[in-house]
Image (cartoon, rainbow, N blue to C red; front, side):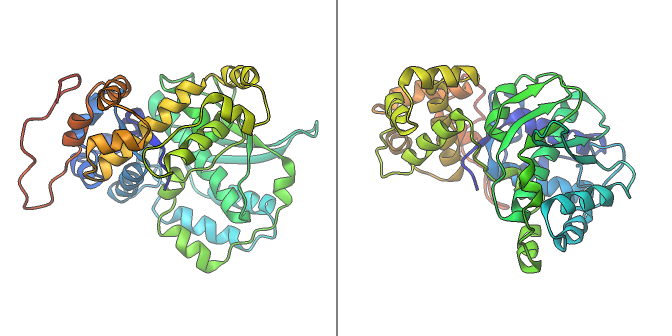
Length: 360
């Protein structure tokens, strides 16, 4: 499971269908280890593991693989049967064609299409689905594109780099997170939702068998959303270098921008220019990697905050606290307290809930 964290916007959108169906979402959040109070804070984030557990719980509660967000339900098990239908195909192109024809048998299913551009450019995977609301449309469109891209890579046992991704909806408030999710430049306000990859991948043979599919289906499709697929953008290469550095023994020493530029065989000025063209910077990527590592650690265990600060490269506790407040609007101690979910029969943790901005 990746160390990538998920913005609370996606959590709220994922819950929309269940709430419209009258399902009490508080137990689902608690079962996923997500404090319901976090949903009120636009800067809050959850770990990929928490998000995957929530999606799995929503599948069960709604009995709908589209989480109640589509015009009609897609019964649980539909995705699994589609995967079984694709497994015997000789190559990825025929597997995706079979998947497209499979879902067209059901009303309200996603309208999938894979086409080769006449100019010899990349193959284009399009996903269309009628949804209820704009924020939910943005969420489900991103989920479907991620799932189909990652399933395609799983079928052939290779990571398929995307050239670009585009969405029919306007750019959401958290649009700057999409390039990290897809590993490619992302555009909004397009005529349709789609992604492009090299056409030669469509001739790659399907290499998975029944035991491998059984293992995938134990956690799919939810697990496909949490799986980390590094892309080929400069920003993703920088992020990967920084994340690898954090896995070294504490205290971590994150490489400077000049060191990463040397690894990529470019000048520091060229690195800055390319990151700027992708809408980010070395410092922003450094902050994102540290933030995600900190949130994951605070959610997962009881590592002392001072030790956590040193492990992710902060020389002083106070600097870590300032950075964490800038990232999330609260302190590490308050975030950890908010995330403590007592087991059945246990008393809740001592002390009141700590609202955003209050000192712990």
